[in-house]
Length: 212
Image (tube, rainbow, N blue to C red):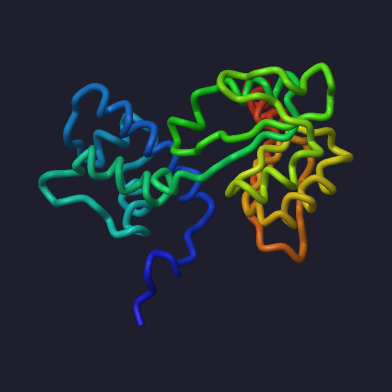
């Protein structure tokens, strides 16, 4: 029996490229470009046309021989694959400098994620507003999650507190974690998805390339 897209095992390398496709296609739409060949898209993205075709064939292809890709259609379909159309709800735990910066960013709305709650323990931060959201005390977390569907928790709390906070949220049925605590967060025994972000790693890779 032929596997469906949902049943296929898609490699992390392919998944990591999908947001880039979505971003570049969005830029093409803003420039009123309606169709593009894999070769032209490859030149813009600095990867091979063969790689683009292989990646997109994992999800059905979407191109037409002699025509290329319909930019609007491909942008929409990749958005669906990435869950942009799901309207996931997110909260941020920890509204220090990083948490405040993330809460102020347009990326959530632009990627179909609704930022619905901000939480902190600092009395100087609790009660303040970031854009249209008021920062709540962390003690209100359980009540908030019971009254709102929370799909994603963005964690900008100290490293030592991250596993405890993650388990607390998993018990509240939060399934997705965007972790900025500079640790490889794992939560055995829970059906959750975790994306660990290491900004220092990215900086070190840049330094490596400069060194070479």
